[in-house]
Image 1 (cartoon, rainbow, N blue to C red):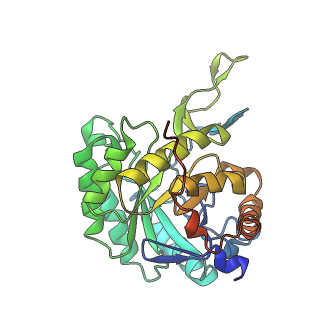
Image 2: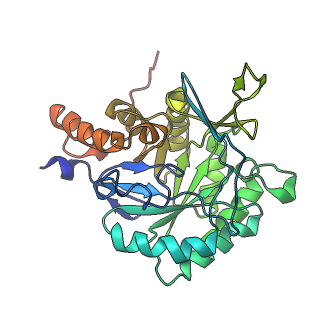
Image 3: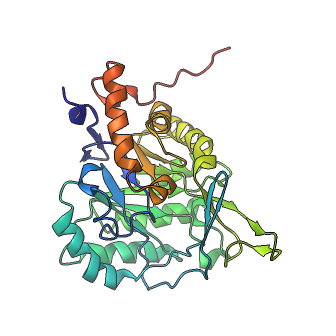
Length: 313
């Protein structure tokens, strides 16, 4: 059995050549990284967010680094549904036939998520294999409360999207939710095929010389190594609460990091900040995973999923 065969996995009715996926916001729409990294060797990529209307996003600076990772406030900047369908979907269809392509969808009312998916479904070229719903967005009709924190709003978003597509639907949840397992149950009950955990964690960095926030928006989302144990715990909790597959994201920079997510129950593992720092990092993790499995006599990566030995004492 080859290393490539060992890493193959099936998630939400989709075959992935390996479990490593580029997280939303780190790969653009694929074209931006195509000359830098061999995307066809990865399991998949999640596109940059797509909203119904174009969004200019947050003011600069949008990114600030610290010892534990990175803080960002991009503000979901994107060219909007029409431009993505016109300019980016045809490129994805022509250039990434092997890599699974998930589209990150955002909305600011319950109906906007479904409207974006409806538009993509109607596009002349639609190479998207699945949709990932970013329910960390603020619901402007509910005073800014994020959709994931309101079980009824979350269910309405998922049901609306489910009615527009037969493609797989992933729901991406925030680590700041009071009970991420309950949110996962609500999403699955409404028709989600898979759960993604976690999104970034809210944070603030201060430029002490200016005595002002380091980011132009003020606060931002924290990612990178400091998010690793948070994401692993959320993965473990969600996989114990629902029977659908989980994509674990947060702080992954090595095969050991990815394996921790898989042992906690993840079927796919997303990489973000590490890939921004070194675009070759995801390919290195794929190779390291293959070598680890060979050394440990693992015939299929799926054998490891959810085999965490929890303390009994």
